[in-house]
Image (cartoon, rainbow, N blue to C red; front, side, top):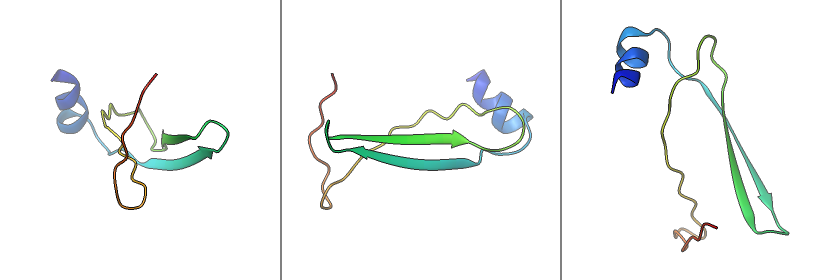
Length: 63
């Protein structure tokens, strides 16, 4: 947990994110791009992304 306290308690600033999306029709693959745009060091931002279609979360497979 030292990374957490180093960036959120002892560090200064906050993350600023630019979020982009790309759908590849040929492979039926959605890509999500997260880019940190703030000055200074990047933040560690563990996160999960859920994608919904028609208001429902479809079954996913990872390969």
